[in-house]
Length: 278
Image (cartoon, rainbow, N blue to C red; front, top):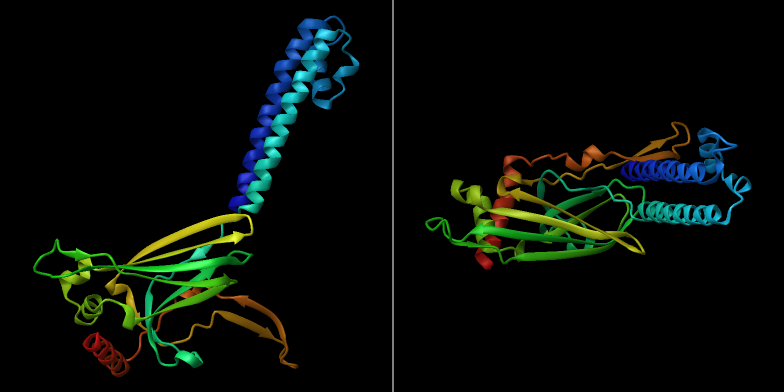
């Protein structure tokens, strides 16, 4: 929609300049040569229709007409360039989640690995490529000294392409011990200051068109959630069970289901073990 609005705006601007140019030069033609046998309205209409050169006889007026055609050609070229650029550089609609998820991975080679998950959505009708997700931590080193903070830690993960959505998973073992401790102890001072920033960048076509989107999360925005979002929904034939249609339920990207108390405490114990071993 943004691309369509930009193209429409460019066309309106071009139309304004086109009318203005023809009005300006029409006045010149009228007073220079044509006022004796054409009205001003006729001169303007002939100029817009491109047949005014049939009425012009004097060389100096033909030169002015050539200048007008040259200016119109430049305006047309600029408009075409802008429209081409807008089409190629469509802004992708990237969605970052409302919450960050602490969960165990289920992939075969990393089964049960405790991670911080960032579920990124791409609502565009085209893929985004070379997508990089950077997680940056800012935390209080010592709550007795509020000015003593650390912001040096960051961790990066990349994926070649995202069609609709992708979950970036960062091992909790790689995070600073202090921010993991603040997450489980929930000290009010640390909860107020500590934060995790997420930045997602990439491009949407071979000519570049890079994008960058960022969001900051407090530690209270971290949820222990093991449920698997049902983002893609398939409509099947009730008789043959074959897939008829498939669509993405974008609201599912922000659905959270915090685990029960027993499972939560088990995960907290795992985080304590990670802290102990660091």
